[in-house]
Length: 267
Length: 267
DNA sequence: CGTTCTTTTGATGATGCTCAACTGGGGTGG
DNA sequence: CCACCCCAGTTGAGCATCATCAAAAGAACG
Image (cartoon, rainbow over all chains, first blue to last red; front, side):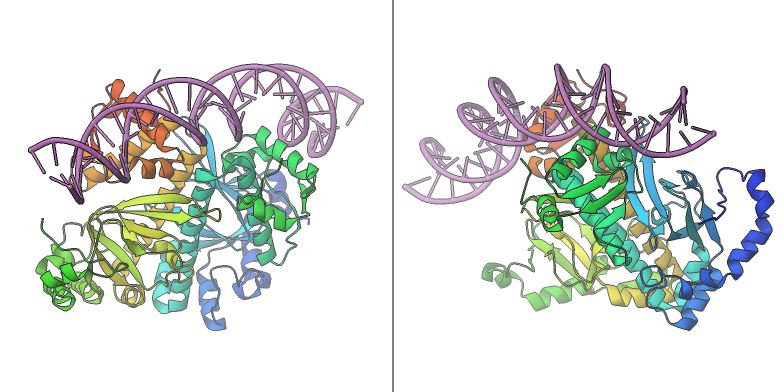
């Protein structure tokens, strides 16, 4: 991978511009055949799911551009005016809120094929921050143009509703997790959740990389970084997982599922 | 109030039927002028928000019926097939999930003007249970008919999206609450939240009834019933609230807000 | 190769849970 | 009408879980 990433929040460095002027690059990605929904590997999971060729082309036409987001830079921030939804083409993001006392709460980790920005529709302003966990790429979907497409393509509308509803469901399960699971359960549930999402994307369900820091995991799960570290060690000692830095292997999924369900605890 | 409530989950008792046969009652409520959206006191908060007379009439036509739900009975259960959304006309509900180990997590308390069932769109099955906290009344909104209306009334569609998005936002703030607030903060935030919702409905923001048990509050906030009880006592001793059973008065909202924000704790 | 950030591990302590006993209000039946 | 019961809530004592503080070890980066 030798891509140049242009961040939108932080001004592009002269260095990067020298390689690829902004205008030419925008042009390039728009014309790029691989950028079309129909050619995108995520199209069965993403917004265009279930659309025919024609409808997918219509959707393609309204999609603003494919935008690169460098690691650690913001896709949007709390309070930013809402104009676009973002579909992740490639990479990983986290969303987080800042509470009045200044500390953050990670509200989710998103991966390719998932939508970002749904929470902003209600007030036309973003309610959380979205940050790339690695160099990533998103499709910019102007929401007003998407809305006008809904009239033409009922299938698209229906699927959009499903995706919003799914987000509600996802958050409910996090509430369940934070509300009445012990640390061990939360962490096992987290691992199983990642596993199934990678599996749905055609990746290994047992071996993957953690794209987020221990601290981010802890914050998401309502635990401290130290607790996460101890849990990793404990699970490793039990022989349930193999860990080396961010590299992770699930050695005993059934047991992990049992732990997540609260049917088993480790000594 | 001398209404007879018919529960859908639990068969109507002969006693109630004697007073009002089911058929006649259904007829009565459908014809009832007060049942129309335009006459409903919640129409600025609920689905028809911002619609003109004509569009509101169209919406009225697709709304199946106004259904009464008796206290403690289920409006729907996990796994029930999804056909309707429900708008609360009157009363209060709670939604809760059951996790694999059998204990429940209350995911929300809903009041008049709010929609129930949004989480079911994603899979065509309900993901949580909805239970009436008191004798209540809902409007049954067949989702497929609502979807066909979306094509005709863009305003309706747009507002529907806002409501779904609002639900996502609401859940994110619960995640924030469960993820990194201490007990005191959680409870203060809960009280302030109720207060503002009652205020938006034209009720007193300082004096209201808790429609849920201490246990339900605790479950929602990730705390035990004992903790809730202690918090009530503590807040009372501080002079921030007045409590008598379910009757509640907020005596010092600014301080409660400060506590919720984590800017103040009590000794 | 040193600096810096992230992670790990250990020791201690506080918050909130568990268990238990008690109180009070509301409904029921004698 | 009163006595009783039952359930929801309150209060107390002890304890477990996880947070906090601290320090060392290991990656990552220039």
